[in-house]
Figure 1 (tube, rainbow, N blue to C red):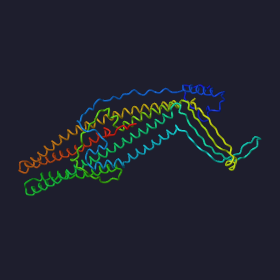
Figure 2: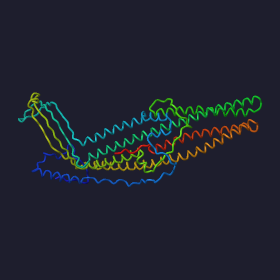
Figure 3: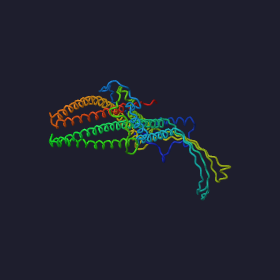
Figure 4: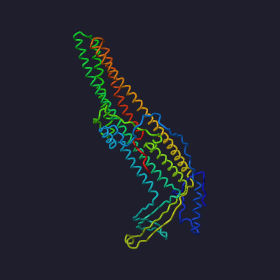
Length: 488
């Protein structure tokens, strides 16, 4: 009789005797079955109780903190809502050629193979062997003898999944694959959002460069006028120097923006999986408008974000791996069989070989391994707990990203309205200041100050337009970009 030690978990491995059919002489089939059942029940006492998962701390908010008004729900292909054919083409290229997406797809293929490996353990294995063997042995008379043996055989083996360990391993591999699919979808969403944001920022820089060049032409006209007035003695050298300084300051903005545009083009080219180079342009910044978005309820986010799906399936995989690790403490039943032929010559092997066969089963029972299997199960339990903590963190981060995007859209919209009003007021100030200076009622310094304020206000409007469009992209991404949980 085999007694089970509850304090330690182990497994009878190679080099330690295993209980195999045919090795123990039993008086009857009924007694053999009874002993096996008794043996299994005894070893079942070695099972490790499942560690309890950590208490949930995640609470679901009822509504978002910020309301941006009614709008359309987020759908796949959300970048088409900006109505820019070049933007559509850029995002399409990024999704097709981006290196991060290719890496994610390659990793997905790896986990598909891992699932096939795990599932194959639940199926029988069939192997074949053949070949000659030359050996020198001691015969029955105590004399050395040499002989060549030709043999061939086919072996079959099958492990009966009594406790569900192999099934749990397969379920864990399937959950890992689904988690990687969520990661691949999250990567695609991130690349699409990054490509759209980079393009919109590029159009914002283009608009600022156009403004800077137009302003530079205006400053050049002002400098020419100041120089003529100085030459005829109508104004002082101070006003000429002020006009030249303002012209040089505006001229310095142009190469600064050109440098930023080149860098933005290179960044976007890398996202597209291409070498650094120019990027085709579509609609102007002022022609781009993002439609309003309906964020829905916070609870809907759990089905609309691929990274949440990834974290959720990671919890399932960790839980199934824990179940498989606990089942390692229980006995396993393996059936084996083989059939083959053997002969002392090729002719005998072909015409009258000796037929060989065997059939049997073995129980591999955990007895003692100094606590290794229990420690592995404990490790699997901590991995499961960390996966739960990670899932809660991903969900909370998703809530924060949506709230941040919503408040950005709302406040940037308000900022843009104020900036437009400021730009109109600054334009009126510049008009009055120019008339006063032209009619001799004010110095050039007054007009110069008005020019600076107007240029600053115009630049601020363009920057806020680009930021508002980028905030809509962030909101699209935070809401999952139209992605939905796959139906299982």
